[in-house]
Length: 495
Figure 1: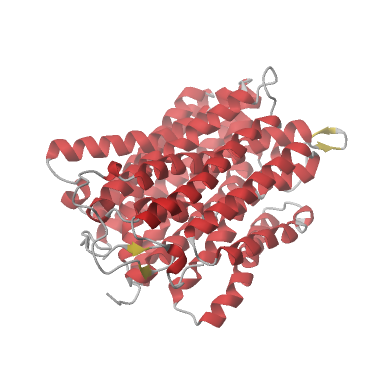
Figure 2: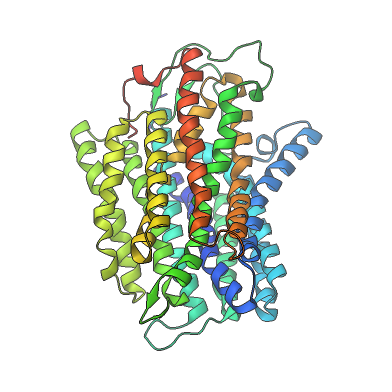
């Protein structure tokens, strides 16, 4: 069970995590540009997020149906690394549609391209997440997954900056006018990168098969064994028979939804509620703030990945304070290179303290951390709705800090105790990524001036976090009744 992490293989694997983040965060730049240039309603522009995230669910359904029809799991037949390579090729085909979309300024063709990119990402996600866990000691599997998530957020930090540069042109100064036609360049380059990496995957030594152990249920968030005996009940014939799972499926839907919707609606809020020299905040200057939102997730995930390296407890304690600021420094460096004024962001160093305090209070317990960070998310959104200007902007941006580690918290609670149904349950959870599309669309609809308006529309996120707080309490009780009590587990290599 104890084996060294295969870092050379892992380095190849995490490249796809970077791509997922790059495209997802870049959508937040496309939304205000297309809304402004094509005179779209807020809900119409949110179709960008809707098309991309719903593709994950459509891809998962296709995967499930094809597996059933063919009489076996697709990845077990074609291999995991081959599945990732195939997913990269599918995504590359989607990027080709950005050329005609940019040339004709066609919104429909562009979201069609994003949908196909998302289909490819769905297959990549299904294969890459379990691979990250098995590439070394299973006890540090979740830390490797957090590290991969940190690379994902490096992509989310870079994406808005690079796509913004492509759309608005040079960063050397002067008045910048959005050019939708320029959007084809970064996406065609991205498509070429997909093909190159697909070839690398095909000939890499990354494992093509994964051996599943149904007898030991792992606490992936902390890297410790929950029990050494089977944790599933023979009387339950389906993963959906476990209430922690189906409640967790709603949790994943809600979590991805509030994470994406907050970022997607931030540009519109800034254009309406933030002024520069008495005028609406320029669209081309919004990108660094979107980048900061996604970098906030990187701060939390880099902190959570510390355990993958096997450091001593004292070093881990120090790194818990250093890692979020190191990630913040990466954000500042990227935007400095892009010639953005980074002085307004220095104040954010104080906001990061809230992440560190929440992490310390959670003590590695997924249920406790989910509850604490959900309450922090509610507080941040309420401040953002009651204040205005830059105070609101930084309050909404801090939601990224509190979303940073919610995925592993929900995922851990949802699959705990499923035993032989764990893989089935995990696939159902990935399917619920579609929440990023539906909740973004809902908030975009409510953000119309004839309804709530953009600032009040963030109440959607408050309700989302309220459910996640409920799930933290409810899942803890459900699991405790099944003999799984995280309060009694010794902390491993996680938080």
